Length: 81
Ligand code: FES
Image (cartoon, rainbow, N blue to C red; front, side, top):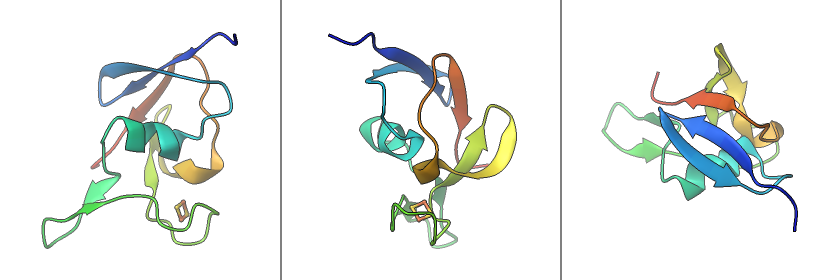
């Protein structure tokens, strides 16, 4: 069985399998990428790098398209910023 990766999403640690995208980890953690001006949670939509709905801060870098990034051990993700 492959070793699970630890990823910190909004200061909570989650365990994910290698090969999991950050967007999928955010969905598993029930953490939307942002809240719209109408108060609706926004999450990954296209899953292929086009819509930009999945953007979050990854390892301190803003506006990363999380559907295009695989989780790495000890990665940090901040949403709603
Ligand atoms: S889900 Fe559309 S760019 Fe990531």
